[in-house]
Image 1 (cartoon, rainbow, N blue to C red):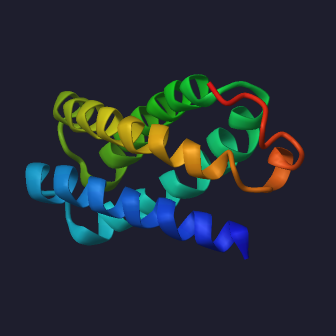
Image 2 (cartoon, helix red, strand yellow):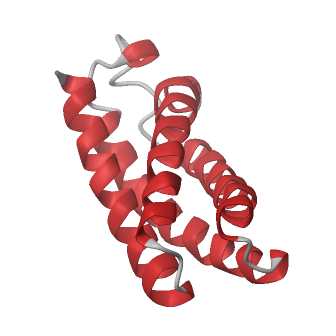
Length: 127
C-alpha cells in the first residue's frame, strides 16, 4: 500500500514536470512524454528512493535522481522523438533540475515511510 501511494505521488509529480517542460516547452507528444514519465518514475523510484536514499542521505539521492533524469530524458527522449541531440540535452537538463527540486522534497516524505531497504532506517540519514 505504501509503495502504491509513494509511486502515485512520484508519478503525478513527474507527469506534471515533464508535461510542463517537454510537452509545452519542447513540443514532445503526450504519448512520448507519458512513456518518459513511466520509465523515469520506475527507474528513479527503485534506484534513488529505495536503494540510494536509505544508504546515504537526501542530497546524495537527489543528485543521483538529477543524473538519472538527465540521462533517461536525454537518451530515451532522443530515441522517442528524433529531436536534435543538443536540443534534447537542453530539454533534459531543464527537466533534471526541475525534477531534482521535486525529488528533494519527495525524499522527506519517502524517508519517513517503511519501504524496501528503508525499513528500520527511517530516523537515520535525516540530512
